[in-house]
Image 1 (cartoon, rainbow, N blue to C red):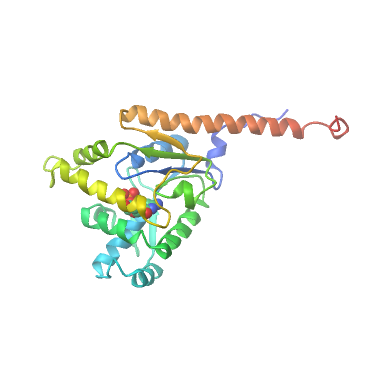
Image 2: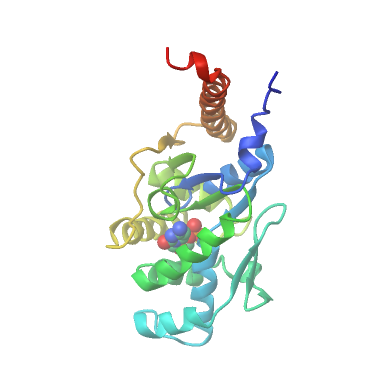
Amino acid sequence: MIAEESPGQHLTRKNFVIAIDGPAGAGKSTIARHLARRYGLLNLETGAMYRALALKALRLEVPLEDPAALVRLAAETSIQLEPGDEENRVLLDGEDVTGQIRNQTVTDAASRVSVFPPIRASMVRRQQEMAAMGGVVMEGRDIGTVVFPDAEVKIFLDAAPEVRGLRRYDQLGLHPPKQPEEVIRDLRARDERDRNRADSPLKPAPDSVLLDSTNMTLEEALNAAESTVNAWLARSSTIDKQERNQRSIPPDQSAF
Ligand code: DC
């Protein structure tokens, strides 16, 4: 008798990928973190890589509109993402820059450097290498379309811009440096750039599950994401069983 395979085994195997894409403020990080914990996967935030490169460009005053200079910079830059409890620790040339990449200047710069194809190509290669280590939840803008077009599970997470902006505003703490309208305006400007760039624009992969969290509580969104993964697991274990059954048919009967 063949032992039952636990569904969890699918997830920890090499190259298993849950891709989560969507615009800023849709809740990708929260959902990615939750799924990574729930299924024992590595959580990788690709936006942090563009942010780290942007931070280095700002520090060295490399013009953000000069692709050749940015490509040279990227070639001599090491960026590592280390899994942490709440977010990835981001190492830029070995220096921990986790606390320095979330301000508005770096946020805008990251969106600007990410439009250039050679910069994207170098980040995509690094991201593909990272996932070869084991099962991952990877979040970004182009994970299901470009980085892992064959990802096992693809979720495109969206929400109305006003809702995303207000969620971001609520995260700014007791003394927000900006008005809610300003946060919504910045977010729309970044959306516009991320969705309309020529190379790998933000868009849902045709085979992704669309999850609109506009009218969902956090718990509902987490449950919906988990259901999507569980549905894939159920499908894949049925297919596995069918394949095993086919393999166990003795050769002399298989002609029928
Ligand atoms: O996810 P984030 O907000 O940290 O991403 C910052 C910027 O990086 C975002 O405006 C666009 C870019 N980005 C990208 O182009 N592709 C990704 N896979 C992730 C982020």
